[in-house]
Amino acid sequence: MTMKIKWGVIGCGGIADRRTLPGMMLADNAELVAVMDTNPKAAKACREKYGARYAFDSVQALLALDEIEAVYIASPVFCHREQCALAAKAGKHILLEKPMGLSVAEAREIADDCERAGVKLGVAFMMRFHSYHREMRRLVREGLLGEIVSARAQFTCWYPEIENCWRQNKALSGGGAMLDMAIHSIDLIRYITGLEVEESTGMVGNQIFQYNVDDAGIGVYRMTGGALVVVDSAFNIPDDVSVSKLEIYGTKGSMIAKGTLSQVEGGSLEVLAVDNAGGYDAAQNRSLVKPIPISVEFGNMYTKEIEAFGRAVRGEGEIPVTAADAILSQKAIEDVYTENKA
Ligand SMILES: NC(=O)c1ccc[n+]([C@@H]2O[C@H](COP(=O)([O-])OP(=O)(O)OC[C@H]3O[C@@H](n4cnc5c(N)ncnc54)[C@H](O)[C@@H]3O)[C@@H](O)[C@H]2O)c1
Image: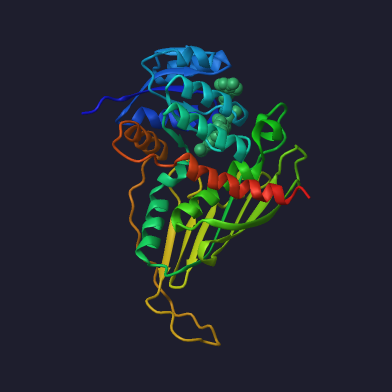
C-alpha cells in the first residue's frame, strides 16, 4: 500500500472544522500532521479534535515541517494568493478552497506560482464528488438526454449582516452570493454537461442586506453548441425555505436534482427520457413518462475529494479539479460582475 499523504491544514474555521477535517479523518490515504489558524484557539481546538500533532498560528511554521507533503487551504479568500505562493515555494502540493482568489487575475497568478514551483494544485469544488452529480454527468455522456439545450440552478441561503465579516467585504472576499454560491452551480453545469461558457451576462444587486457584496445575483450564459444556462444565488432567502435545484434539459430528456447543492451528500434526482420526441403536437399533450430509477450510494464528498487529490499527488490519478478548470468557473461569475460595473 502506498504511504499516506501527510497533510497540513491552513485555516481551521467553518468549512475545515465542519466538513473537510471530518472528511479527511475518513480518507484511506490521508494523515493529518498539522493545523494552522491566525486564531490560536481555533488551531488548538482542531489539533485536539482531529488528533493533529502540531497547531500553529503562522503559515511559515507549518510550511517549515518537511514531512508535510500537501496543504489544504481553507482561509478567507484574500489570504489565498499569498499562502499559495508560500506553500508552492516550500514545495507543498495544494488543495485550495474555492473561489481560488479575489479575481480571475489572482487565480491565474496562483496557478502560475504552482506551475513554476512544480507543485500540484487542485481546487475544492467538492460538489463534483456528489454521487448524483457524477451520475448526471454519466447519463449526459451516454446520450440519454440527447442534445443539451438548457440548464438552470439555484443555490441560496440566509446571510444577514455580521460585523467585520470578511465574506461581506468585497476587498476580502471578491464577491457575494454569486462568487460564494453560484460558482458551485456554474461549475456543476460545466462538469455535468461538458459544455463551456461562450457568452455571459447577468445582474447582481443588494435587495435586503446593505453590505458591499451582492446579496443576490443571476448569471445567464450561452454555452458551446448554443445551450442556454441560468444560475441564480441569494444570501437573502431563509435557509428553511431555500430549495437548492439543479436542472438539465435536452432534446430527449430532463434531470431535476433537488437538495444536491449542499455540503451533505443527499437530496433527490428525477430523470425523464423519451426514445423519440415524435412530431409536433399542437395540444402539447403529455403522456406519462415514468422516471428512470436511479440508484447511487451516498458517501462523504470531502473524503472523496481528499482521497482523489491524494492519489493525484502520488501520480495515481488526475487532479480532480485543476486550476485551469476552476478558473473557467470563476471567470463565468466575474463576467457577471464586470457586466454590472457600467
Ligand atoms: N467547498 C465548500 O463547501 C465551502 C464551504 C464554505 C466555505 N468554503 C471556502 O472555504 C474558505 C473559508 O471559508 P469558511 O466559511 O471556512 O470561513 P470562516 O471565516 O468560517 O473560517 C476561516 C478561518 O480562517 C482563519 N483565518 C483568518 N485569516 C487567516 C490567515 N491569514 N491564515 C490562516 N487562517 C486564517 C479564521 O480565523 C477562521 O478560523 C473560503 O475560500 C470559502 O469560500 C468552501
